[in-house]
Amino acid sequence: MSSIEGLGWWSAFHNAIDPGGQAIDIERGIQVCRSTGASWVCFRFGAGGLNDVALAPQMPDGSRRINVEILRAYKEAGIKVYGWIFSYVRTWRAEVEAYRKIAATGLIEGVIVNAEFDWEEKRASYGEAEAFVSELRKALPAGMHVGHAPPDYLGARGGDNGKHRCWDAFDDLCDSIHPQTYAYEHDDRGHVYHIDRVCAQYEKRGYAAKVCPILCSYRPNVRGYTIENKAKGVVGGKPIPTPPLANEALTVAADLVAGLNDLRVIAAPASSIYSIDALNFIKRGVGDVVLATLQARWAERIPPVVPLAPATPPPEPEKLPVVAEVVPSPASPLAASSGDAGASKKGCSWSGAYRFVASIFDDDDDPPTTPSSPEGKRKSGEHVFDLTPKG
Image 1: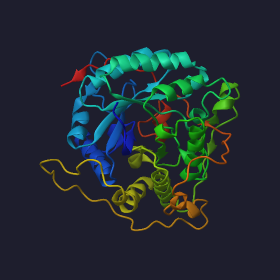
Image 2: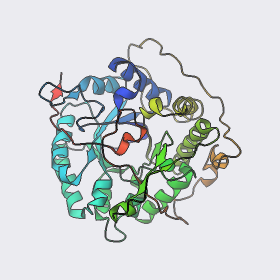
Image 3: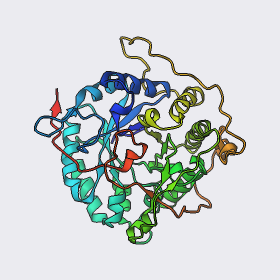
Image 4: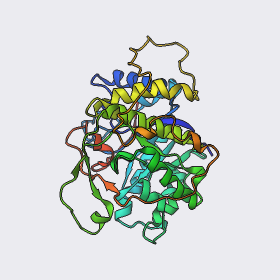
């Protein structure tokens, strides 16, 4: 069975990476992976009507085709490619067929199932998730990696109250678990705080060896409704605006590095960041600072798993500014954890005290009004699964 290792990036809107055309998007995306020491990338496929990654423009008949040019470019650059589709309980069979066609290109290493809030709201059973993964494995080449990316706290607590049995099935049957530990969608206590609590619960349930948390590279403009209230039909008013932080770009960047260091210390098999395209379109200039900080304080610590240059080196890309050191505002709640966080934990486990965050935030699943919405991660629209490979 293949494994997933090292640092990776996620992408939902590949052509939002850069204002230029597809060639510039590819060049910029590969540059980000190389400069941060990332060895893999996970692209979204299959949601018709949105600006989805690795999909060619819509055909005259309304169908969309797999854009193998993007996949091939990353693979030839030595970056492993994985695929994900935002999953609905009602469409998992169509998703299996889509994954089969994506795998048939021979350009991906595996898939990471993105079953989140629809599976929770429908109270999907263990059997439904089991059938999904079973059919998916039959559709993919033998030994291809299958992971899943649940909501962080919802997935971590599994079926402890009899209402979340689908999470237990995905955890049991998938090769890796990628909880979406997006700290800033909860509050401003930072990634280390939330990673440790999510991982502690997975360890308590016996899944520690599979857990590969995802961190976020942005701080949303609003925080949404709780999944518990939504399930009860409680609207609860408008989403709450997120108050700005002093030195926000530096604070977010430093916290992201602290979270990656925490995962390194506790020896997570892989870690990843959502998302490579959010670095371009997030507001308040956070993206460039995040990227420069990762270059300066993270990439040199973790040797890339793959060569950094193809056989024939391309022209030298324009270098991004490098931040030599990040010092968040003393007033920031993250100031204490912005350095080499977790260094004192060496040899420790995830066990110990943990407390669940009551508010599990949910973006609604309607398509974003523009392809540049940072909240587009959980907004998918209807899937179109005519994914005949192009080229």
